[in-house]
Length: 135
Image (cartoon, rainbow, N blue to C red; front, side, top):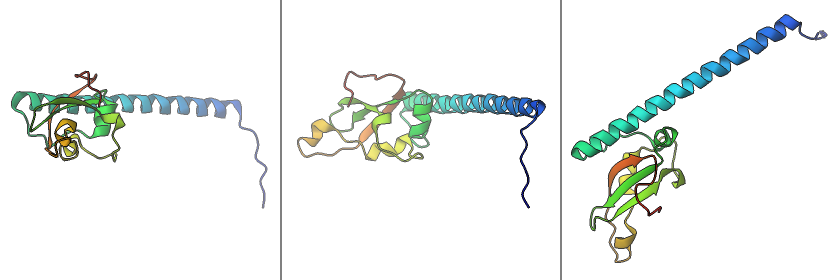
């Protein structure tokens, strides 16, 4: 049996509009809370790294760092101590990859030219590149 669908009345459209607006407001508020929580996680990790150099684990995920505006990671070669800034947004990564997981993946280009592959020391997350080198 078929029903003929009638056009909604004006009050139904008004309720639909109100619910859609409330939904958008709640989503924006939720996103702001998530961004704030991500920002606090990055600040906490930075403080831990600055105060005593670690431990690096636990750390925020790369996506949390980017979401809160901390798109750069300052690292240093454990062998030659050359500093470098890494653009987190440019790295291929899974959504759940944590910043501390990068320590074993990032290598010094200077030492690599002489056949060495020392791991990187993670220093701090930054909102802007802390070093002129944008590698």
